[in-house]
Every structure is written in structure tokens, then in C-alpha cells.
Image (tube, rainbow, N blue to C red):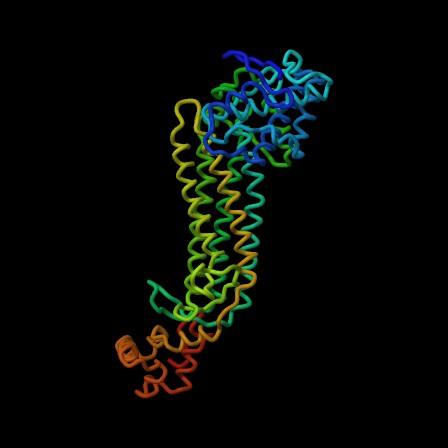
Length: 467
């Protein structure tokens, strides 16, 4: 054991760990989720600390020997090492101070080893004086959140683009699969399965744009704002240098906020990101539920598409297969929607010069981005790629439909069309049979007007017949 102290007193720290006394206090105080920090967030905080060390060396405030050791320690964390040394709970009081100090302590103790000193020898390299130089939790922690969000957005957008690409592929593949369109869960007019797939792809593309726009906003950082945004203890040269250093080492273009006080006490940019995730989740739920309805049955439902069988669907009903992949996408999206509420409450509950609720904001944002990425990839890999249309069933429903009378309106008028629909409902006869029985159209004209190509494109079906 080694002894460490802060202004509250002294504690014994196991000598084989790299964290210190303030991390131990957080471990004692915050046993909330049973989870650890997101690994991408640990890396993001290391990026922030590395950038700060580089910037402080460039201004001459940080001795090169110490700064280079801190940079080397940060590089190890960025490479995936020492992640087991971050035991603090993601949800914590203190606006993220425990995360910030956990990071400082790990980097300092590893830096001490690098220069040949013992862990805990903070007279040589200090978590507060050196790793936290020209910083506070109030600028380092939200900047780390932003670095993490940007990193996670890459995987999420890649997953969503995979989904769009596969839907567009299906749109081409199923362009000739004519089926009933439905409004109010009632028969409407025909549409192709390919057109439906293309519509899902279009909606998800909007989601991607929303996410990209929101993530672009979190490239604005408040490094150098320190405690309340006034920049106390951060030199102007450092503020410029840390912006450049963080941009250089992450490959992302970060920009210092024009108003650091605003950037320190307002977290609306996180609400933008969370909102874009929520709206995208709503689109995904709608799509997943459409798939579930189209696949319902198979004997007593719509049965218009065939989902790949992924597991037995019942412990008591033999042969039952459920749409489990669509269901898990739904449930993931529900969680994202719930997380957005937590983010919203966190964003609105900042007071004066700081939002102390950033830990819960970060926790829910990171989870939402990870959950969506995994669920979308699962949907593509386990459902969409092997999806098959039930062409015969689509034709059967179409033949039985009354909704196709809509295409006849320009030719026989609303009254005659209504009469056809009413008789079809009451007798069960197909629309085509009744048209011919009543001599309303020739067979050639009827087949032309009610052809798939005419009924699923803009314009008046068979308009040439009106001339």
C-alpha cells in the first residue's frame, strides 16, 4: 500500500494501481450503475490530456520532461492500455470531477514510472499541478465527451449507411413486386415493395444528415475556459495551442468557442445530438414495425415478406418463429428514446456558470450511440440481407383488393367507383370481374389502367384513353 492525501485527509491506496486517492473516494461515494466508463470515453479523455500537455509545453509552463512523460502515458491509454484503472461509476456527482481526476491520477502515476519514479510521488509530477495544468473539470470533461461523441458517430453513421445501401439494393431487387399499399391499416392503392424499401432508405438518409449536423456542432470546445468560462489560469497562447493540438492528434477540426462562458454553462449541443438519435430511432421503429406487420402470419397474417428464421419462437408452440431481429431493433430504439429524456433533463438542469449534470448526459449519449450502432448492424446482418418477398401472397392480396378502384376515378367517376367498391365488399367478387360484368370498360382498357406500371407511377393511369 501507499499513502496519498487530499485536503479531506489521507487514504491508503493499493500500490499496484495507477489511480489515486480521489478515485478511491469516488469509488466509495458513487456505486450507482454497476458499470465502468465507456472505453471510447477513456480514450477521449486521454486525448484531451495529451493535447493539454502539448499546449502547456508549447507555452513554456510545463517542463518538457514532465510533459513528454504525460504524453507517453496518454498514448498508452489511447492505445488501449490501463483501461482497467478507470473504476469510477459513469453517473456521479461533481460534474465529472471524479472522471477528470481518475484520468489525471492514472496518467501521472504512469508518467512517474516512465521517468523512473515511484507511483504516488506527486511532488515530482502532480495530478493537479501538471496533468490538470490550465484546465478544470469544467472544460476538460465536456471536451472529452465531445471527442467521444465524434468518435462514436463514425461507427453509427457507417452502420446507418450500410442499412441505407441494403435497403436501396432491395428497392431495385423488388421494383416489380406489386403489393397493396395501406393507410389506417386498411387497403389503399397499389405500391411496389421496392418503392417501400426506397422510402425507408430515404427517411434514414435524413436521420444520417441530422446526426452529422448535430455532431458537427460538438466540434466547438471550451478548453481554456477553466472553472466558469473566464479563462482564469489559462493563458491566451495556451487556448490557441490546445485547440490546435487536439485537432492535430485526433484528426478532427476543433474550434474554440467564441464565448467560453456560454460554452461552459450551456450543454444544448448535447441535446442536439441526443435529439438526432431519438428522431432516427423513431424512423427505425416505424420501419421495423412495418416489417413485422408485412411478415405477420405466416398463415393468418399478411405474409407479404419472409424474414430469415433466427431462433425458435416459443417454448410451447412447436414450429413458431418470431420476428426477433425487428423486435430487438424496436426495443433498442425505445431505450434511445428514453435516454433522450434523461439527456434533456440533464441539459435543462444546469445552473448559472456550469451544468453539473454532464455525467448523466454523457452516460446516456454514449449508450444510445453504441446501442443504435449494434442494433442497426444486427438488423442488416440478421434480417435485411436475407429478406425475401412472398410474391404469390402479394398478388393474392392485390387481386382481392378493392383499393384499386381509385385508379378508375378519372375514367368512370367517383359514383361508379364507389358502386364498384360497395359491390365488391358485399359480394366478394374481384373488382375486375364486376367492371367487365357491368361493361364499364373494355378488358384491354381495364388491364391497361390497372397495370402495375400505371398504378405505381405519377399521373393518371391510362390517360391516353381519355383523349
